[in-house]
Image (cartoon, rainbow, N blue to C red; front, side, top):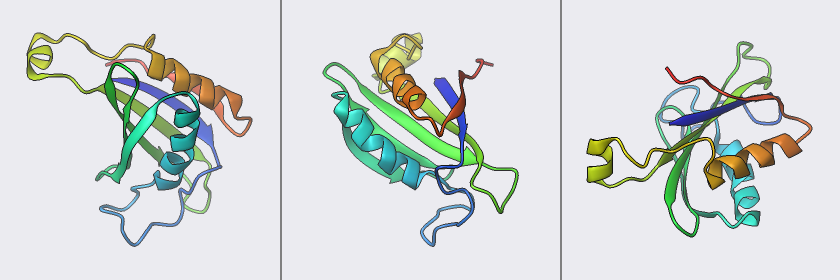
Length: 133
């Protein structure tokens, strides 16, 4: 998995939705904002859905399918300013999973596209890759 982090106050981190699976499942507005931005870059968003930790976009380019997890956290429950993450994983077949092959990299088209989208937004700061553990 590759993870891009950034900070912004542009998306909701204070009002929990009635449909949240768990408290703090923020990211629906970010996922809905990201969808047309991806589509402008020839990434097809096949589905957006909630997970127990945030939201996920199931996407495809001309060659591969991906899962983009999005979620945010704030230290101040009265502020939408916080840290957001975009978590990239590739849809892989069982053999690739067993062999540990075909993993997502920072150089893949979808990662570069999302990074470019984030960098264009003046309301986003501290855009960076997280170190792998």
